[in-house]
Length: 201
Ligand SMILES: [Zn+2]
Ligand SMILES: [Zn+2]
Ligand SMILES: [Zn+2]
Image (cartoon, rainbow, N blue to C red):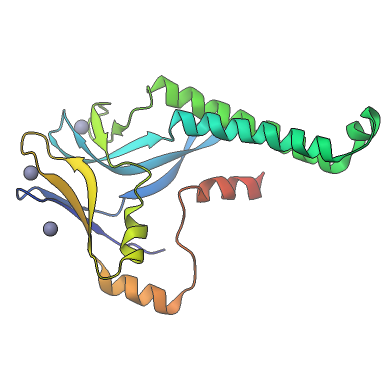
């Protein structure tokens, strides 16, 4: 695995930190279900520092995925121009339905915990939910790869009290270049966990 480090520093003062968790994912176990939990960087108001924070995926995104699953199943049903009993016994449809139910259960559990936390990120140091994190739609590591020459990426995260903005910088340029030369493996996307889960199910 590529252990690339990211340095995040304020563009107005000396405040900075180095992390390998600017946009990582880990598995959160909830009633035996494996849910994706994002690890990123944020500003904790309790710690008054840049901290590692964890958050579940956005509630609206989870609901959207649930809707897509239901639509996929009914679209498949419509392609089968057969009667009720033939549909009931159709192997592919049964397999897709079973998998959809499993995925819906997992998404439902994810929605449940995301709601319990009011869609907020949690500081891993003090457990506070008063944390401003880097937006999950901003894939900083991918930006480093896309703009090889531009080595700084604005995080959109402000430094309270100071008014500066935190800027991310790849701290392992040599390692990244070496990786491109030797491996054609794609970058892990934000939804790679989901794909893993589907191949396991
Ligand atoms: Zn700078
Ligand atoms: Zn600052
Ligand atoms: Zn904290």
